[in-house]
Image (cartoon, rainbow, N blue to C red; front, side):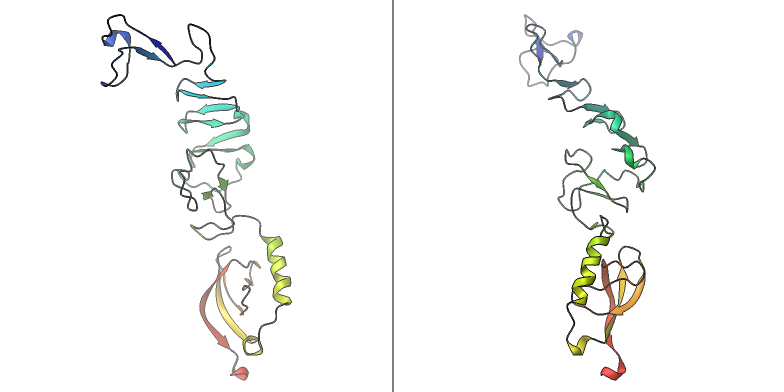
Length: 212
């Protein structure tokens, strides 16, 4: 940062903005990318709005976000409703939630909007840094179909004790929001509608009359 000093050390509005009242040098502070005296480069990237100095990471300043983001710029677009820069492959293919990034990550509690950690845009429209299920609406964060098929095999290879084999339970699916009655199993209960195991018990267990 360059400093243009006044000989008398006084402050005055005619020379431009200076530091706070505790700043005693009376110098005009002028942020710039290179030193006026020796041409030393302070940063490969410099934003004259954020006054950010950094190595070149293909950064760009987004006026709508109000901050600098790591690019390259042509790989991102700003969604006006979400109020956030998103990858171009999400344009027209994501669920918009107004000002969705103006909150902390529900898992790590870091501010999402200013975080340098990439936030994942979930099918439900919420954002989080990591995790396989959205803690806000409980929808699956990723395509879990391969894991559900693995669970099918594990359930088939793990028979329940005889007293539980005819036990059924009402469940609510967190992915499709459907309700169904399925056979109880300790490893998981599969939705009859979308075949997801991301379910929660919604009623008590029942045993058929001939087993009571």
